Amino acid sequence: MKPPALLLPGLLALVTGCGPGAASEAPPLGLDITLSRAVASQVGAYQVAVLKDGAKRNCTELQRTCLSSQVAAGDLLELKDAEGHSGRTLRFPSAPGGAAQGLSVDVPVGRDYALVIEALTADTPTRFLGSSCNYLREVHSGTNAPLVAAPIELTAQDCDPVFAH
Image 1 (cartoon, rainbow, N blue to C red):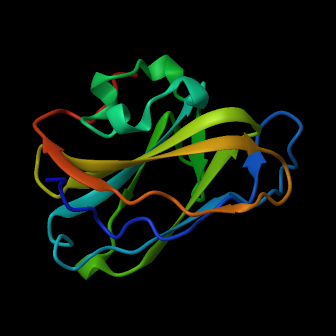
Image 2 (image 1 turned 45 degrees about the vertical axis):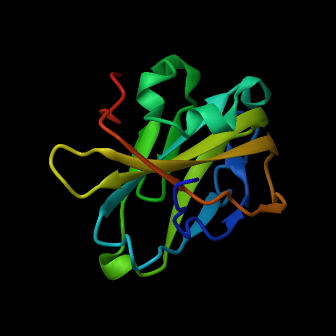
Image 3 (image 1 turned 90 degrees about the horizontal axis):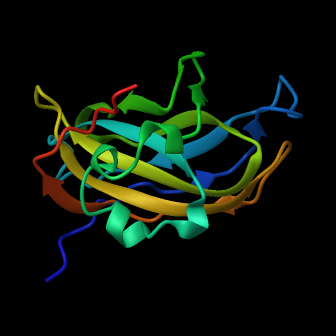
């Protein structure tokens, strides 16, 4: 029997990327997240990462456990959030009570990416609850076509989701 999926994320509206050749005023990749109330109390944050060479990745395998235990930090693109924080992974706290929320991430312009969104526990230390994996064929400057992101599959594992930078 397959584990249940979170009703997460809702719509991934690929608005634009940033990086070489992109406008400095370009809007970021938008991500709308809705969460099943049944698991809302378990989720403390979402961790977003974008991998190079997406076509070579097996999303089913990437969703089995923490991304940090499967890929090197060098395989991840540098991302930036709306507040100007940057890193190879970005964390966003979940909305109280599982309320819908929006996230904003600048993704470099390019081709052949895999977007991974990990649901993390509210516990200390943080643990992995499950993830969503989505292929991004191309991110270009300007407006990109919207993408409906895959639901997060609950596959709670005892692994550390933190990447050593």
